[in-house]
Image 1: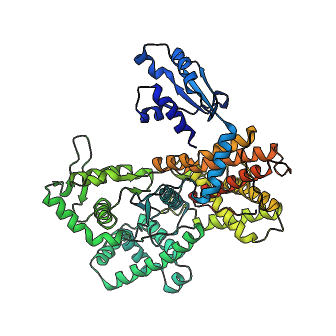
Image 2: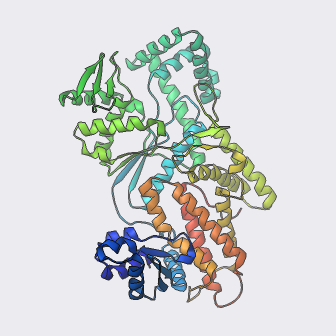
Amino acid sequence: MDFKQKVVELLKPELDLPVEKIAALIERPKNDSMGDYAFPAFILAKQLKKNPAMIASELAPKLQDEAFSKVEAVGPYVNFFINHEMLVADTLKTVLTEKGDYGQVHASLGNVPIDMSSPNIAKPMSMGHLRSTVIGNSLSKIYAKVGYKPIKINYLGDYGTQFGKLIVAYKKWGNEDDVKKDPINNLFKYYVRFHQEAEENPELDDEGRLWFKKLEEGDPEATELWQWFRSVSLEEFKRIYDELGVTFDSYNGEAFFNDKMDPVIQELKDKHLLTESRGAQVVELGEDENPALIVKSDGTSIYLTRDLAAAEWRMNEYNFKKILYVVGNEQAEHFKQLKKVLKKMGHDWADDIYHVPFGLITQGGKKLSTRKGNVVFLDQVLKEAVSLAKEQIETKNPSLANKDQVAHDVGVGAVIFHDLKNDRLDNFDFDLAEVVRFEGDTGPYVQYTNARAQSILRKVGDVTSDSLALSDEWAFSVAKEISYFPQVVEKAAERFEPSVIAKYALSLAKKFNKYYANVRILDEDDQLGARIALVKAVSIVLTEALDLLGVKAPSEM
């Protein structure tokens, strides 16, 4: 039963308000002693010309129902106390029937491309790439859960002047054997050296531009080197994506859209949107706004031009309902301009473009920088996380089977969970030892709680019960939390915010651990079957919540 909906149904005959308005007004009290739902009567004071407390006291007696053990007026609020046994039984029955489909919206709401991860080729994936990758992956799972078809796009940084610079660096300091042995790290080393040398010798930048021009013109040597750099980079990226459990539907990077920009520029000309400004071609966006630069004074296009071409192509290819760009907060202005230019071009679907920004990962309070070589490599972090997880498993459960696999799932899951438990826009400092702890607000804590539930289920085997009603406060607290899961998934989708699910998983894990500490779950009495049903439901929902974050749920730890 949807108890909030029941509150709406009880209030509807008594109020001269639309159902949607009633639903929006219903609150969830912060203190359990004030009930499970509350309706604020002061919203009616003007209309009824009465004191809100009086309105509440008149309403409460008319709203009694078996779904609520008590409905009472407290000041200007009508507070609803859910019938504990009914909520527990109803929630457990629903979860055990639907299992992993609990909270699933069975609908075909359309395509949602998600532009995510998008590292630059010939550079190692760093911790800086983690956020876009895991936020995008989690959103793809959340959107699938609420009835959309996600399409994960890795918009690789595989074009631009940087590749001219890399070609120069390779020709000056590189050799084929070294690149074959350790492609990414050696290419990265050449790239960093180029920037160090260019500070003393600015002519190097001119050489880089020259080689990029050759690449644009289809020079065979430049093209062959570029294709080689792209190929070895993609191999390395895919290895790390496998570690993270992330896959993509498209690797169409910047280069794919290179021949699709001229038609966009022509379209802007045909629609009389391009104007000249200091030799450059721009789209004016309004008096108080910077114009959108489309073609630079030297005749070259820029990132925005390519993104316009990509947006049009994606709309034609996917006919999307909405499109998400999971890109750092510092690109906010770029996406505002992208939407405004598309709107000026007459594309109303630009309203369905959503920039999903996020804050920075810092280390020791400092921003990480690839160009200066001040970078923390993602594959190294994942290896260390797995190693730390294995150390703790060796201490806690040395006889555990599949130790290496569990350590991998816990270590990698810890890194992903730590990122996603933070509000998307927050910056956070990364301390690996804290991230992989089995206690506290961590991924391993949630995984361990699920493994504890699984251990109980293994002990008792298959126990069933005709009645799933439990009346104790601990069981009610857990079941009530489980009942919120569908709403939590919906909220995470609406806000593009995986942290809503991570925080929910932590809350459910804590409530279950309190239940475990205060209730003798395995006592042989007439409520054993109902208690085991509660444990099963907890495991189903924790496993599903972790999956929506892209985190595995080992059955033993």
